[in-house]
Image (cartoon, rainbow, N blue to C red):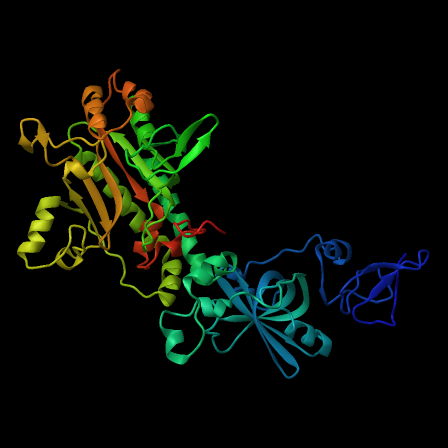
Length: 515
């Protein structure tokens, strides 16, 4: 059995009696397992590797780790275990205050010299590197004065045992407290701020901030609400190919990839396959997945890869049935975020203040020409996609009847508007806007193979590459329409943020391919 070399009390060096050389070196401070009678008791603190943790951590199969979020006054005077990151530590005399963080929740903890803790234990706790992961056994205590700096304001933990189970490096590439500083606050008092590139270069650490945690939990909620709402409406979720033979939007902004002895493209959208599913009598479909745009646009709202929330459905009498279905889906998402994600919304708002998102029910719908003409007649100097909030008191609206010339080849021309006998100026297409920025582009689709072929030729599309798509309309296809929503833009604009990279976990743009 290994023996403890007491000549070196910290760290202990364990030697093998028979081998006479070093058996292993463990950085353990006043720590022992229950089998090591030489220590005469259980360990109270230590720095453990994963192997050491398995070998030396006291065998406690009944141990239950309590979530920080669950630390409330109801648990007062209970001895509990918590696993969390060390957010901050501050030594003061014979005691050390820690803030322990677990995702977006944190709690204050105290280690103080006394019956349960030695002076060395306090020193050990004070020297734990920030962002290290610790297991602590602690007594939950109520506090007389609320701890405003923590999410768990009514309790603190009095630590009796603390073990570092994963140690962070002492020098972090950025500090979390700098990352969550409200806009402009650092400039006013000279404290450090973190620019966007530094955040994205060290994204894993940036994602630990309470703001990032809130953003991506809300984003998860958008996807879940999207799925739940459409499933309740009778939609079927589908998965479509991302490697395709022709540009799905009929444009040049595609990524070309080598595909054995030929070339293929990364899908700009699931558009062609959504329509083929309608032709296959699925009636109402949706999909959630990545889309790719080879656009050299370095703006606050463009990414080369983003998550598309796509909808397609057959309608009975008018394509406005499609608009109503999509806008109702969006309204249900807005309601769900408002009702279920207030904590996340408020967390983001502390760092990035914005006006609460406003929407109407039913959703405001204006024709493209009507909306632009109305604004110009009112003397408002706005572009075609500017914010109508000041006029209609809403952050979400639809512009209908876009010019046919700016829409994809599969867009249905407006049959009631012709420049001449064979030329349509406008189309049965629409865009949806949040806070003045487009989040969805959609339309009624052409469901006649002959007209679809003519429009494809007009757009100089190689018919051979989309033959299976066009052929699917030769066997009978119902009138249908749909749209594609950008998940990241929805989250950015709902929260009133100013850059889509803030809501893309690992963003891709013309200048960024890592991490």
